Length: 328
Image (cartoon, rainbow, N blue to C red):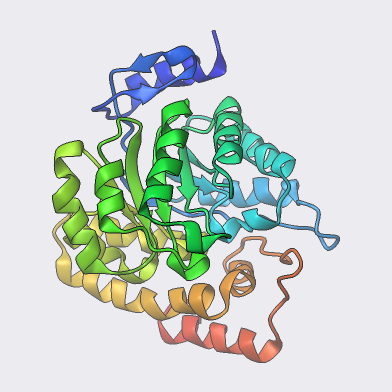
């Protein structure tokens, strides 16, 4: 029995499903993967020579596994996937699956610039155990990435993918914001089960929840800065860069919301905004990796051409975490 078929049979017994999950040999389970919950898009640790520090990754995962995450996104934007070779991307996924096992839901960032390469990468990620694919918008020829091109791209990927596909809109990195009409159209595809949106337009997210509800389409917030309001408009969770550092606090927002403790959830959300901005929009992955070290994780260097931040910037980030009560 193939690895993917075994994984599918396991998931049908373990997870909540509503619609068909596409598998090799056109086999389809009568189910849809439940992706609700909080995920860190895990940082890729490097050694001083910029090789991947797999031993440090295993250590980080051991610590993250103590937090009630739904799962992990491997090769999201915070994973520096754009600087990894295809072989490294697949090997990294293989290692995470090996170390995490069935404890968490593993989502692979499989997006590439061409449709053909995205199809190939998605298949390879599925082969080593990924349970869903997060597919970022192609963006190098952004002038040609109109609605028709994007619908065509995602449809071809989803038609051939052996695992469910999640759309990924991150205009801060790609300068392409997936249009609502594109998302609504693609939500009708049986193998496209959700969206991660990092744009931060709560009105857009709420309207998409309403417009796609008949398709059982699941929407994830793409930033800890708006996790609480995203839940309030019907999103089911979040893929949050800050969760690499403050994973427990991010999960607490989710639990407080579910428990109806709205004032407490709001207050915690307020405290997360400035730290999140510091390690994402303002100082990016280099800032995130510095902050990880303060909370017992290995951050380490980034891969060139990303550069380390200076001491004055490190002091700014530390002060933000202290001011909001996350460091003494």
